[in-house]
Length: 304
Image (cartoon, rainbow, N blue to C red; front, side):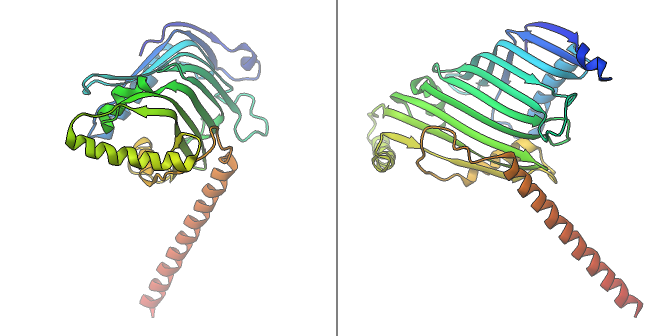
């Protein structure tokens, strides 16, 4: 992590309200995450602790407003040959009211807005609202990456799937919400006008034909030369013995393939997650009530 040029100050308008918080503006910070085949969750946890400690050492007072100018984030796979570097640069980000100084009646009092350029010159946009003061933060986030040149991802796709693209545009859309510890949302990657590089090896060619045939079937049914996959995300983050991030990643195993228009669906809201979170809480309460009644009946039988 390199925090670049940092301008830190006490937020005086919050001090008037009796809150001692800070605001920070970082110019050209860089965040690198080495994403290897990790057997233990403690490695990912340690990486998060490094980032947190760096910010805490820099700003010991709670950050209420954060601004990033021209930042860069890299997700590195060093064990791959060649090395994989999935980066996002020219990050401009504004996060406000992180410590809920001006909460009012809002369930999600903090706002987050960001734009960036991805690998392959894609346009990145992120907007959302949050309440990060809670132990498991509530949030409602929308994300889009549009018109990235898919050939820039060839190192990544070749390493994980043996696929190389000759051309195409890559798009990624996502919405997710967390309320009362319940996560719901989706991730939707799309490929437009894509073409795969032919393989020479006969054995690989047979596998390749089957692979391409599958995608052509989808493309044909799409009718607009677009390949779309939608991955639903859903899970209860409350009573986890494992870390939250690995649990969220496991949800991806329930992926299914479908075709959708090129945009966020606007089908995921904070209210969706809140309703499911409250429903889960109610179910847990009923389960606990039944357990207590069984225990009372057993105790009564022993007395008799």
